[in-house]
Amino acid sequence: MLLADHWGWDIAAENSLKVFVSRWENDTHRPGPAYQVLLCAIFRATPAELGFTRSAVASTLNERLTALESVIEGLTERLGEVAA
Image (cartoon, rainbow, N blue to C red; front, side, top):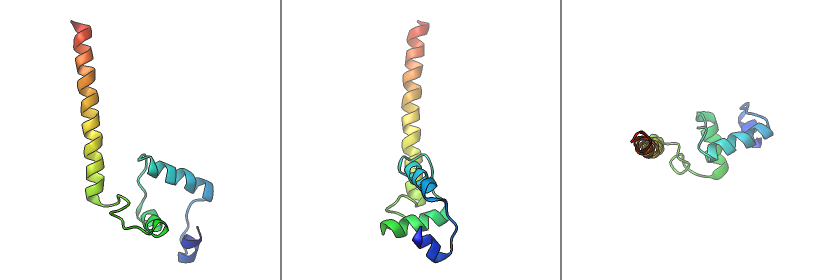
């Protein structure tokens, strides 16, 4: 929060930031550009290292799509067994 204050940025309260970071770590929320800059500064990492590049997003989406396809295939098989 001190870094954001130093830069003159308004950010969420400390408790909200904990929830925000938790959501990011658990892949349920993607930080916007301002928070990406802060997170890179805090972790001393590049955007690519933190998964903020477009290729990282595409990779994550492809992984989720593959997982969903597997779930759908499994449900389709089970539905076929029930119908038989």
